[in-house]
Amino acid sequence: MQTIRDFKPNFNCPPPSSMTAGPDAYLQGNIRMTLEDPELWKTFHELGTEMIITKPGRRMFPHCKVNLSGLIPCAKYILLVDMVPEDGFRYKWNKEKWEVAGKAEPQPPCRTYLHPDSPAPGSHWMKQSVSFLKLKLTNNTLDQHGHIILHSMHRYHPRFHIVQADDLFSVRWSVFQTFTFPETSFTAVTAYQNTKITKLKIDHNPFAKGFRDEVDVMIYVPSDFCQSSYESYDGEEPELPKRKEAEPIKEERYSPWTAEREQRVRTDSPPGTDARDMYNAEQLVPAPASYQPYRFHEYGKSPSPSSSIGSCNSSVGRSSFESRVPDVATVPDHDSSKSRLHETGPSPCGPQHLPSPQDYPGVLNMTMAQAGKPGVISHHIYSPYSAEQPLGQWSGPGPAQYPPPHHLTADYTTQAVHHGYHHSNVAEWSQYPLFSYSCW
DNA sequence: TCCTCTATCACATTTGAATAGC
DNA sequence: AGCTATTCAAATGTGATAGAGG
Image (cartoon, rainbow, N blue to C red; front, side, top):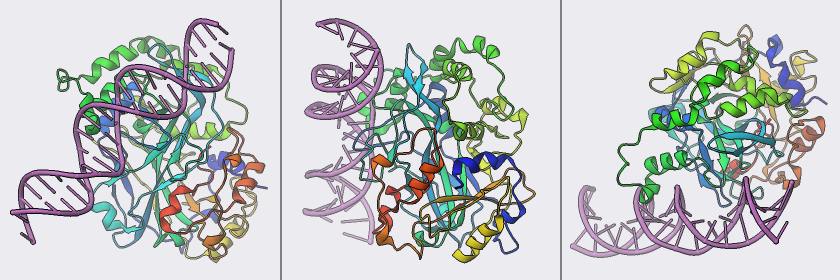
C-alpha cells in the first residue's frame, strides 16, 4: 500500500503531468500571505521562542496573525493551522541554551485548528488580518476541546493552510496551499525555560502586565539578550558541517539553537526519519526576502542560495510569501478527483496507489499540480465529510492510535485512514486530524 | 536516598466581553 | 442609540510542590 512516507520523498521529482492542474483547473491569482507583527516574532525567535502548553490549553503568544491577498473575493476559503515538528528530537534547556535530549516522543494526535470564520469569501479574509488568537496548545493527549496537542520540550512551527471550498463539506479533494513562517517556530514547554523569553512575554503580553517590572518595561532591549544568548555562536558557525544544499540555514544567526544544531548535524537521525528529513528540507528552504515563509509543497524547488541567511537578518516589514504559480482552486467533484487519481497511476514521483475516498475517509492526499513549475505541489484534501461517509459514521481516534514517531509506515497509514471521525457539526471539525499525515 | 528535570496547581493580576444603568 | 460603569470569565506568569527517572 502506498503510504505518505513513500510518497513524500518523491516531492523532489517533477510532478507527473497527470497530476497537474488540467485544463479544467481553476486558476487563481497569486495568493500571498504575510505574517503580522513579524518584528515581534523575530524578537522571540532570536531568543528561541517558547510556548507554554497546559492541560486545559494555552494560547500562543505571540499569536498567529496573518494577512492575505490574492484570493478570489467571491470565492469561499477555509483557513486552517496545524503544528508540525521541526525535527525528530527532544530538547532540554541546559545552561542558557537548548540541547538535544534524545529522540522525539511519538507524535500526539495531529490536529488542525480551523479558523472560526471558515468558510468565508476571499474578500472577508483579505479585508483585515486573520487572527488565530483562540488557537490553544495542550499537552493533554486526551484533550476533548480540539486544542492542538504537542509534546513538551519539542520544537514545532505552525503551518497555515488555505483551502478554497464553499463549505466544510465540500473540501474534499480541494487544493490547499500551505504557508509557513520560519520565525514562528517554537519550543513547547510546560514552564518557561529561558528567562529572557519569560520577560519578553511579560513585556508584550497584556495579560501578563501584572508581572512587568515598572523600571524596565520601556527600556527592554532585545538585542542585549541576543548577544548574551549567542555570543559564542559566531565562533561556532564556521565549524558547522555544511548542510546539503537543500538545507540552507534560515535566519539562525541569532538563534539560540546553535549548539543543538551542531549536535543535530552530528547526530544521526532516528531511524525512519526520512519524512522528517523532508520536512527539514522544507523548513530550510530559503526565502527570497527577509523572513519569507516558504511553501510547504515546494520541497523540490531549488532554493535561491543567496537568499538564506543574509536576507533573513535584514528583515524589514512583514513576512510574506507570494504564491508564484497559479493553483488549482478546487477539483470540481469527487468523481473527477478520483479519476484524476486513477490517471496518475504508478509513477516514480507519485503514489503508486492512492486510496479511494471510500476506503480512506479523512485522509490527506497530496497531489502534485502545476506541471512545469518545479517543486510546486498542491495539496488535495479528502474531506471527512464525503458523500460516501456520512458524518455520523466518523469516530474519533483514540490515544492508542498515535502514530509512531518516525515511522509513517504502511501500518500507520492504514491504521489512520481507517479511522473515521465523528463530526456532528462544523465546530467540531478542528478537533480532529483533518490532515492525518500533516505531522511527519 | 538523593538529585535533576518536568509537570501541575493555586494564586494574584489583568484584560476584555457582556450586561446593566443612565 | 450611545455612553459609562460594573461584573465576571478567561488569560497570564509565579512559585511551591509533586512525581518520574537515573
